[in-house]
Amino acid sequence: MNPTYLHISDLATQIEPPEDAILSRTLHNDERVKAVLFGFGAGQELSEHTAAMPAIVQFIRGDARLTLGDETIEARPGTFVHMSAGLRHAVRAVTPTVMLLLLLKGSR
Image: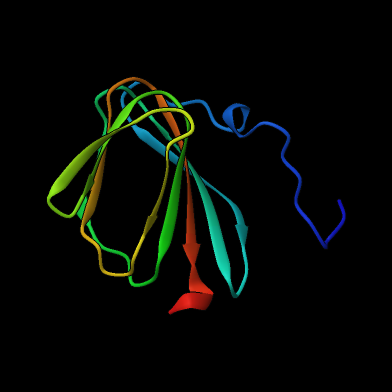
């Protein structure tokens, strides 16, 4: 592995959503960004919370509902959302779902 980059050709194959749980796998972590891949079983939910830094979520596989502040949006493969630090948010998987989270540490 080359220490100057990380290459993953297909994020959807890097994690298999469990049937009745949420699984997370850290793909990368340095002083500027942390990349975490999540697998959600259908019906699983990350309850409302905030992050101390800006974040980006991208949905890779499945369908979910993403609550951003007081608004709820439908998320499907290809959905991309940038969230400011401190924004209340929650994720609920409608079907087995794979989601990439990027925490932007350099933007605190």
